[in-house]
Length: 297
Image (cartoon, rainbow, N blue to C red; front, side):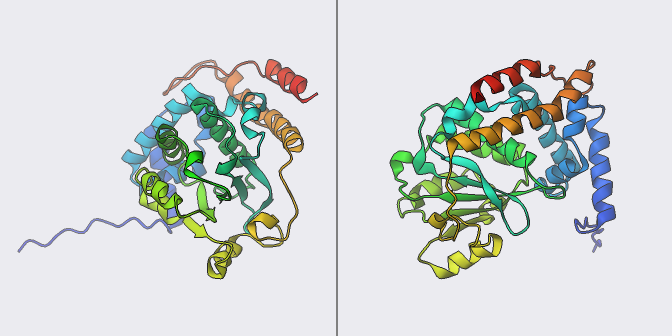
């Protein structure tokens, strides 16, 4: 009998092996534009590698697709005035508190859906994700979702087209960004919709989803392991009286827009020659700032 030759096993907990894989992926990508170079940080490369079980070839393909998508969609250039109408009811926003590890928390309330525009809803989602990443403290790569299903019915369910594109963007262009997602008080009817959504999700993402019910003490304990009840709003069984205020949130997003622009503009202006995956220059942020100021005044 021939003895099977055992290949060396990759250990993701080994810092040296991780660094070697990251360097291998970086080399495989080749020369990058200044903007793509900034996006492809060591932490970013690690997330794409993690999403593809540290297979460099598969990670490279995934990352190159994301770079093409970002070059075309320009997520970092979306500004608050473009998507603010989507946020008027507080259907999705960055919470004023963090989880126990200091991670950004996004609150979603699908029953508060106020538009029917597929493109508008997708751009708002991408804007919110970019803003959540912007607010992550140094050393943190993931965020927490808190989805409130109070008042939700099938009439509030997003079209399959929107659900499919949403999952595609989340899984393929924001890999390993989700720490955990709490589905709070989902009604029985949601189970049918969930079976459809699960079809588009990978097993890793499904494992991060936790069903939480206000009257189920054990499920609430699971959520409290991540989020201190003292900072949780009362509608989630917490002790905080904080509520969404669209005007105040708009002021916060306007400030964050300026911060976002300052991060990416330098790279775009210095990117006179495209290398590797091509992309166009960012629009003049001066006009963006003027528009933001005008809308905010």
